[in-house]
Length: 110
Length: 113
Image 1 (cartoon, rainbow over the protein chains, first blue to last red):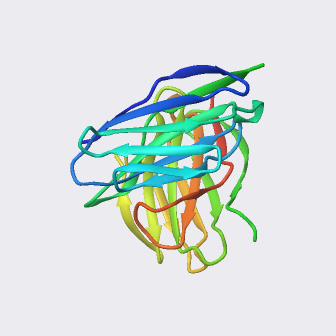
Image 2 (image 1 turned 120 degrees about the horizontal axis):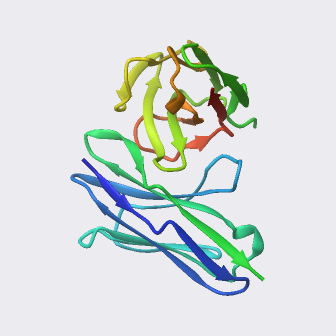
Image 3 (image 1 turned 30 degrees about the vertical axis):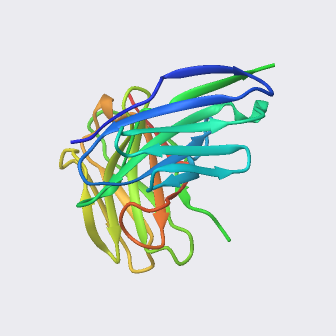
């Protein structure tokens, strides 16, 4: 089976930087996704990593280390609208579905 | 282009009843996946349909079923509702099947009393 761990809640200050970690245990790893979900809304795709390293997309970056079973989402220049849940999801070969972690609820304070 | 549309958005049922939820994917997307979201468990995979065929199924009891029509619209049904079925049911579509970038609908929030 798969096991995905993320912190349940985090708080950060507007304008600052926050790193949300995700660790996973799976066989046949085939990619890691990050989604953002505002309260009462649909999850929306943020990033995808399949190879080790950093993927940068504007204020958001995602990092992957396959050997460590570890990823993080880095949010820079935080804005109030970044208050949301951030979901880490893993894909693996032979079980073609995304397995999601329980999500990290991020609260941005002024 | 229109996103993923789910109906109804909210519904209340009582134990023992059954419910049908509908999902219209993004135009041109032929794969539809369903997830159950609860505060304690996060998103749990229910099933995936592609070209009217169920490709994958999660670990849910047989009370949970689904189907897909020739126009790629999908429905899921839950029979003999239990209190624990109260959840947000999310539908997601993608152009191709499998673990791809998913576009989610806003969900159907089911409350079972």
